[in-house]
Image (cartoon, rainbow, N blue to C red):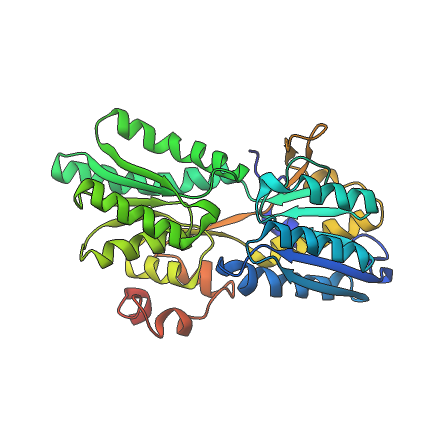
Length: 358
């Protein structure tokens, strides 16, 4: 998947289309669940802030589908009935969005899919992140440590892959990126995947259950875990801790939850990644403005065409990513306003870290 065609600074500097302040009516932002920390904690306030700036005379309605596909469909129907001018939606299940997309099209209301893909129907745009790159960076960091562990012991590192939900199209992109760095280590005998499981709907409870089963299967024979995001990684690590095991490495990580950043600071998680939530949600509102004005997406925003299984696909816009390591937390987390040092260090595993003592 190509990276964003405008640079980070350029994306932040983009101005809204002319006369956006003249747009009135309601714009709906429909979130998929309360379980994933980022949606309510970061995306919601960032979207509201962007809407206030770009479409000050519009009313923003925020809904949460609570991991229920039927509820999300009902919410789209409610938005249509309430004369929504645009809908920005994070799908509960990307493979079950065809009906929802058809409803919006029939009503003549532009719909932007953000973060999670939409399939089987028309949409104005798909706003996401470059997930091949995400997988590459996650696995690149892991591969360096795995090489060191193998060199020290002379034995293959035993890895548990606790991934996410394969129904989400970006899953495959992320797996592709991960494979570029981990597959050569497997072939070289430096890495052994002792178990692999998917956490459906990205639910932490499913990840913890999968890790429990892995530990049982391997008689606790695991040296490291690779997770796709912070919530599933933290849950897998909780299973390890409940088993009384120590020293197991956690690789991967995405979304930059507070717990994830704290684990990075403490050296319990190798790295983390996140999109800039402010930049991404500003892009979402900008796309909605273009759509409401009947304009095409500016060519410099379109990274590629996403094949969503419907008449040639939909334009894809990629938001920029940043990498978080224990050496750059001040710059990548605190200076960007994601969390304060006090939040990171007040309690939890990071309290005695070098970052918090500094």
